Each structure stands twice: as structure tokens, then as C-alpha cells.
Length: 592
Image 1 (cartoon, rainbow, N blue to C red):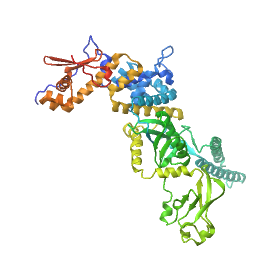
Image 2 (image 1 turned 45 degrees about the vertical axis):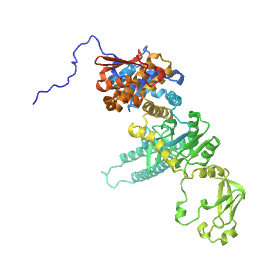
Image 3 (image 1 turned 180 degrees about the horizontal axis):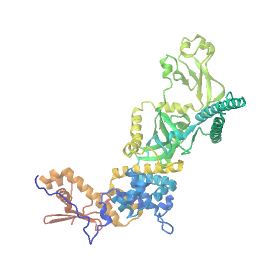
Image 4 (image 1 turned 120 degrees about the horizontal axis):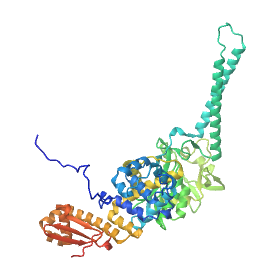
């Protein structure tokens, strides 16, 4: 075998008079620096964070909420949610050691912070939406609304319904009746004289049956108590583990958990409003989410895109009254009639001037006195045809059954709202495709990339707090990707009122990123003819020199953010570029 030399690390036993700084654990372009700047820019007292315990016993000072928030943001961005996993990471993860400055909170302190500060976490999520508005990352004109089921910290078996309780109660009654019959038979057998002297008297068996009956009676009492709780609360389901989790069913799949609603802005697919409910039906959520998004965006009018599950006449009316233009397709409910060749109500045309419906046969259906309130609470006007017209109509067999004398149509008193909506929904295929691209993106990212398909906590308040962390970290990582770490740190520093040095540091990070991009994009052209390339691309020669130096030898570039310039050394030539913080994320070149 040929002798080879391999790279070798430093000896673990080698002492050092100059130990490495914690600051050297992460480079200047590491995203953890953006998390640190975000935590420093946030007013934790204003949003309502409470202090957590120290984990070190009585008399120890508590951990600052800002440090624990940074820990959770880092954890959720990197898919680490468990308090015990976070406890391990703060002791071995160099980025977290740098972020927390060596602090090592215990898992109870970490878990209690999330549990106790659910309201503050919701406020932080809303505060970040305001930051996105200040950065100009939300359009504020159009949002897409969608919902998705997330598993809760409860099993399906721990949630029961009124129907299941009634069936369970009936089964217990049958078992009790059967055991009662067995007891009576046993008493009858004991009353009769035994045929032989060596026959057992069956006393042990009777005692065993009596104990089983007593156990069944206890179970029956518990089921009766559960039914009474449902009757008192008006709910249809009862959860023994997580009192707010519910059995939710969609497309044949059932989960025990919650329904998460989001509103996504169309500019960069950022979540601008969200809510957690335990209703398996999205029908009543349209206006609530649209109004929340409109308030968060500060918009006077808003366009909302949603799928068929959100179609509801009352919510469409509320949206129209609040200057929210909704695009929601209506589900087709006439396919069966059309397949049978029958005439559906959609084929009857309303004549506004005559206040009457005209059927395909030409007859008029006129309103009659009185209103009907349907199961949804809508007040409807009844329009009825004349029996004489229906008797002679050639389309009667397609319109009415043999025993029905006339055709009846029910019209909502605010049907004009739905008519305007139907007119608006014509030729909206492009908007519906846009809705799917917008609304499905956050859920796909959170569920598939991050693996967030379930909640770790129980109860509405805590679940909403954890969801706020998920939404915050989704928005944070996306904003970081869109504008870059340099501009984001500069924004946080300006918001926090930090000194000029931090802003210079963020500008230096952006400068190095720009140098790398320029080097990768135009290195071939520069190596052949730097001067012509500089004039053609309007690129300063010193910037080209820095990019060439970075490409050939990255260690030849040093950025001095505290002094405000970058230095490139190649052979005997030294070039210095000033980094002007007034340019924000751009690189300012002042010349030397």
C-alpha cells in the first residue's frame, strides 16, 4: 500500500493559552445570528412574556424570556420541538451554545416556558406580521384561506361521541340484565335440595357474578355521567385526555386533533393570520379568517380565495358588507338530477322586475305570504307555480313527481348577494389555481419538510401557542430566504436601536454574500479581461478585485465590520473597500 498523508486534527490533550471564543463558533453568515438579532429586537415585556424558573433551586435568578424564545425559534426552525431534545442540544450544539451564551436550561424550564406563555407567543406571531409589513414583504391585496387537520396529544379511543355513549349504555344494560338473570337462576338452584351430598353449592359462583354486576353498574354510572356532561355543555364529543381535541373526518380519514386555519398573502406566501379550531367543517370560517387577515394587513379592501368547503351564504354576506371580495366555488348538488334527466332549481331563472321565477316551460312561480326559516337560520321566501300550469306542462314528468301538484322554490331574502357572487365566479379557473399554489405551500412545508403533523401540548390555549411558534418560524425562515441575512439583521438592529457596529456587521455579511455571487457569476470574464468587464457591467474595479481574490483564495479576504471596510490582500497589492451602512444590504464603494 502506498504511503499517504492524511489530514489530522489537533490533540485533545494539547493545552492552549488562548482558548477559542464563543463568538468564533459561528461564522458571520450563519442564520443563527438572525435569530439572535430578532430576539434582541423584540420587546418581550410588551408582548407579555413571563419569567420562567431557574432550574437551579431557590434563590437562583430566572432565565430571561428572550433567551428561551431564541431557543424555541431555533428549535422550531430546525425541527427540534421536544423540551428534552432542546435540553440536550443546548449542551452539545455549538450554534445554541453561541446563541444562549453557554446557558443550559433544564427541560422543565423549557417546557414550562411554552406552556405558560401561550398568549405571548400569539402576540409575537402577530408582531412579526407587522415586521413583514414594514419590510414590504406582504402585498395586502389578496390572500388565500385554507385549513388542515393536525393530530392532537390524544388517541382516537380517548374521544367518544354521544352516539357511542348511547350504544355503550345499551350494551351495559344488556350485560347487567344477563347477569341478573344468571343470579336469579343461581338463587333458584340454591333453593332446591341437592340430588347428592357431594355436589358443590355454587356459592362462589354466585359471589363472582355479584361482583361482575357491581363492576358493570359502576361503568354504567360513569357512562351516564359522561352523557350528562355532553347534555350540559351542548357538545357532541367528549375527550378524556385533551378536553378540546375532537374527532375530525375529511375524505374518509379521521384524526383526533385540531383544525388549523391560515390566511396566506399572495406576494411571498407568508402567513398573515391563523387560528386553531376543533370544528371539522370549514363552512363557518371564511369571514373570521378574512376579517382577521384584513385587520392584520391594515387593508381597506381585500380579495379572498378559498375552496368549496368554505362556501356559506351567511359568511359571503358578511364578507360583502365588510368590503371583502370572496372567490369561493359552490359545490355541485344537481349532478344526480341531471344524470336522471330531471330539471333542477338552477334551471329556473329569477326575474327581478316581476319578482318571480320562470321555469323552462315558460310558467311563472310567484311569491306567497309567509317566510320559512331553514335549519341554518336563513329566512326564505317561497315561490310557487300554479297547479293548472303544471298539469298541462309537457315537462311535468321531468320537473315533478306523480304526487306533487306544483313546483316550489325557496329564495333567501339576501339572494342578491349569492347572485353577485355567482356572476363573479365565472371564468375564475386562474384564481382557483392560484389559491391552491398559495394556501397549500405553508402546510406542505410544515408537514412534509419540517415534519410538524401533530401538537405536543393539550388544550386550546397551549395548542394555539404552539401553532403560533410553528407559523412564526415558517415566516421567519421564509423572510430570511427572501431578503437575506444581512438585510434582516440590519432591520432588527435598527428596530432595536442598536449601535452602528452591529449595522456595519450586517452590511459586511451582505457584502461577502454579494462578493461570492459576483465571483461565481463572472469569474471567467474577469479573468480574461477585467477592465472591459468592469465597464460593461458597471462594476467598480475594486469590487472585481475583491471577488477575484475571494475566488482564488478565500482566506485573502478579511472584513472588519467594526472599522467599516473590507480588505483584500493578493501578492503585494492591498485593496480596501468601505462598507457604507446607509446602503443597507448593498455594498458601498467609496474608494481609497
